[in-house]
Length: 296
Image 1 (cartoon, rainbow, N blue to C red):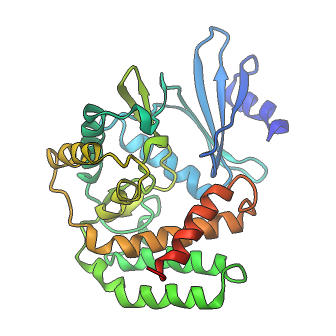
Image 2: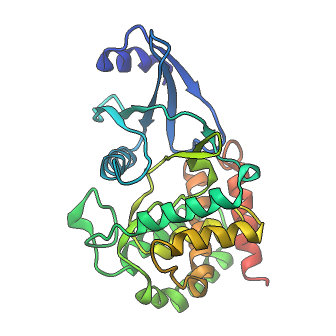
């Protein structure tokens, strides 16, 4: 990526700016640079190696401008044959939210933001950047992602474990017929994608996984400990959501959602060959869940 920085500088007319690689554990999909201008102001350049990630990021940042706190797009660099698509955007003040910085007020506000996001109804389930691919059946895109994850796990997980996953899926997939959608979902709504400054929410970031889906899916991180194990914060989160719209009854499909997320996470790290390196924490967290899922 470093040899390409001069090319991005040229396309953005930022030849005299300083580009600093932002390294953090959650940066699994894109490469992010902090851009320091000559006047010491800062911007963010997000470089997406996959065209779908670029299109979704640009789509949702634009869609939610003025509706939700999101970074403002400064300039887009569409993908080319030898150049990944990139988005130059506003650098929001503050830092990524950590669970230890949560309190009742923040949790309540975050819940209300998720409710406002889900309030955005859409025409179908799937990738909103490709309207022709949308389905009126929530099971269709869910199944496509599940199948993709299973395929990526072949020759990595045991046949017996994969067959158990398939059998559970077959037995429970029809429960998605009664889900709350289609609406915009983030699909990675957790503290690491919320920016705060002095206890105030500045923005929601990383929209590359967002799509048209069912609201229940965005409650997975809340239920699986990615926010906090403090029940007071969970209650405040749900109360904030309920101030905007009714909280969906998501508990009955959580096992299926958790199973699918585990398969997808394992498959992603295997496909990218990061399961023994940068993605090892995600890999083992989800593999242990998958193996214990059928032993409980």
